[in-house]
Length: 595
Image (cartoon, rainbow, N blue to C red):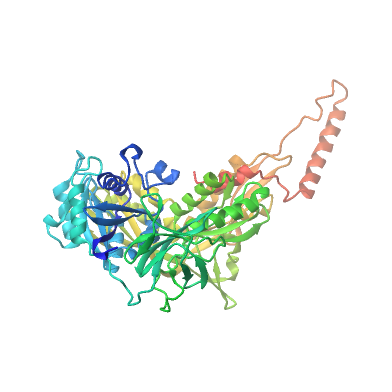
């Protein structure tokens, strides 16, 4: 295929700015999908994506427009999935920067724009939802021009809902997005893996951008990094379903069926090339670093093997989370998993429940701490249960996040109060466009996880937007808080909390457990312990049974003897059964869930 007739581009925007709707209109106008089969969010193939109205996985699709071949990659908008966006941008030459006419430039818009600029992509600014009665078109266009340093005439106006302006946009893609160029002088086949999926029948299917040469069925190929040879069983394009073709050539985006069924061979950023190609691997991607950790256990230990298989399968379609086996005395065997953020954690656990029909217990999310001990050693702690005792700790380092919040000025006061409560340190505030303020700050990652997103959305009536990136490590004022039930610590309830909020957190946790823990045959104390002392305490009184109910009349001393015998029995039970308090599985589940 003539490379000059190919245009590779992506759509990037903040959450709910209309990426998937615009992609739907493009598919419709280019006749890629039959009108009978047309539905909303065509490229969002996951049930979870349709339900929540967000894009989770990037999705490539091929279209034809005026003798040109368009390869579009629809990308997610949430900050947790920015790794997906960065991979998509490596496979294209241009990008549509979509901005909602009712909301204007948002924080995540700036993050994705910086990624596109660093990749050297051609950027087409587009204002969407121009049909909305709430649209502020002139104001938003000025914001976009200020951001990109372009003329107002360069900004296109479209409506994904009505299709207005989409034809002009398709024409501008031809004019503004450059044709792909070969990155190597070699004529042999070479391609970059930007994603892959697993099929039970076909094995690993790699999604590639062809950089040089061409590939067809039955070619002998090689994964350059993992050094694994294989024969291509099928090559094809996304139209939008997998459609086999005779070959894929330089500049094209498509898939290769490898037939490989072992995990760990295919990886994002690897180079798939002809075995005759002697050039070094293409420049790939940095491996994503998990920032949030949580343990996942099956409710029944009989499902442990199923969970292990499910995680391995899921990792073949989402390489950005990690998992390793661990065991707990109370919850049994499970896995310690690393995620890119709280939404990523939520999505993965929900997919495990839906796609693999598993009932799970997910522990309270935590982050990684670097702990310097008084004996001179330094240890990295990613589980609260492994955090050293307070008297052993010299100092603790925790990760910070660099954050940007864009909000209408009327909400700035309440947002500043929330930032103070979450230990945010504001470094700059500036007016952004008309009637918008940008706040730049640093915040501990643990505070970001403490319901910060929901809180900011709530107090700003949904108008504020947030983007963040990982910062450096800084000394933390935190302590380990243990929860004791009948004087025995329950590791599953252990947490790392700020010393400033220690008593508040301890009281709330103890009260919650007091409400949901069933009564035992004897009195049980629930205590929160931190810094070598009991910080909060509640008592659950033992169940009472009238041991004299079968007696009618007679001397009162007979009843007194039975009651005394019962009292001694309860004391003996408490002494022998200490630590053997029956904590049902649903109590763990309720404690892990936030209120």
